Length: 390
Image (cartoon, rainbow, N blue to C red; front, side):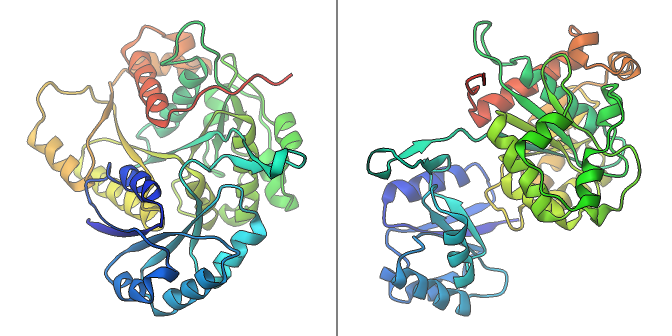
């Protein structure tokens, strides 16, 4: 499916950076205007009807820009999303001003995503704050092994896949959001705990201390927030609670891997809004590929720039692509970039003992392929380990 994006920014470097990020999607058509929204004198309203998304650089204290946003929001075509690009130090109240004017989403300008202003710095200078990367893992069908992929991806990231021996190891967390059928905790032989159930039923907004005390660590250092041991209603979590969980974990970890539920509940939106990458685990059977495509369309409908990686599980990468594989890539509009071989002996050994592949069968084909996936994920996201806390 072809998607069209209009980028409006007075700084050419900004539009270049955004266009470069979007260029990885072969189905994306991009047009750029080097101007401000107000400076286009209403021309933006005429153009917006031809695009699925309009991204524009702005500021919440610019009265002319706010007036132009209101005009654009009132005249846009149904389905056209307006995304404001603002300085990374923007406050929640300032973001709300833009949202009230008609913006659907506020994103940081390239290069400002981790900035925050600290009182007492010279001239209020912004200083960088590390923000961890969120990797969301989704399944194209039940039983495809998405949880196994998520658990071992997190484990391999924590073990330093793709790093040198002397490089610092990153801090990694994994969150199981499948409230009713999640198996991350049992796959790692963790004691049953009901942190997510407590958050849901109490209606509390978790903070960093609460999460740190509630998340056990496995041998590689991965912090785990498992699904509840008892059934809880799928709609028991609120979006603001989920947002708080991931905001806190991003502040304290380099990578946060999340095992998504199969049900597409409303509180998934804050996760996808914070995701730096979506991993879709599938096979190449026709029903799986069709459902994978529906998932991708659903998750990227409001987040056109979300990078999506396809993992083909239980199959070794063929030397020569078959017609079925080429058709699957065509339907998904993405390459079948990652292949994890069918290795039932290693998988059963790890699952049976509640350990990761790296602990039980580090030389197995599946463990090696998962380590490669983790190394490629690290390289693609470009996250560097944060300094250790004391």
